[in-house]
Image 1: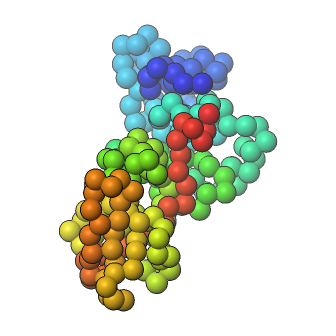
Image 2 (image 1 turned 180 degrees about the horizontal axis):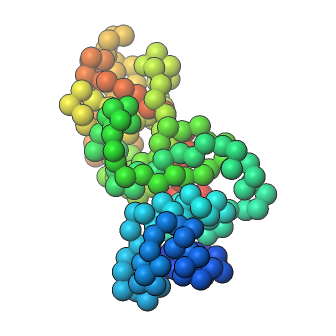
Length: 216
């Protein structure tokens, strides 16, 4: 199921809840007039409404709500498992190239909790650009988790945080010596580049890739 817009999907959740405006407002934590305005199409669903739905309707797929990917409802058989697991923040306004310091520096980027069982990720962020196409496509969502540099396996793709705050998805290959890595793209239009390890601040393993092809 894929509604046309965020507001369409929010209205679908309202309809599914079978609650009146006052009941919805109380449950989500907004004014009843806000609910009415969204239903009538006079107002967009803000961050508080989205967060309220994500936190108070655990059977609603948060990824579907914010992106339209997948189905509105999580399968009943997985709801009990998901309730016992920690949610993972998805940062819809953050892509890989924006840098990832906010993950460890108590940043205040807007996030939405995503409930995906059996995924041990630190955060979900967006893929942007074509340097890793078709391995990773712009618009896909990846789950990442920081690892130590000595746990890197050459030839695999990682998210790399550079000293200048830029971040990239690249294959990591052995450089000219133990102090250098070669960062390589999937797209042959991008040439490999060699960097001293001092230029690479952090490395994140890619724990999950979410796309329409994997969820539909």
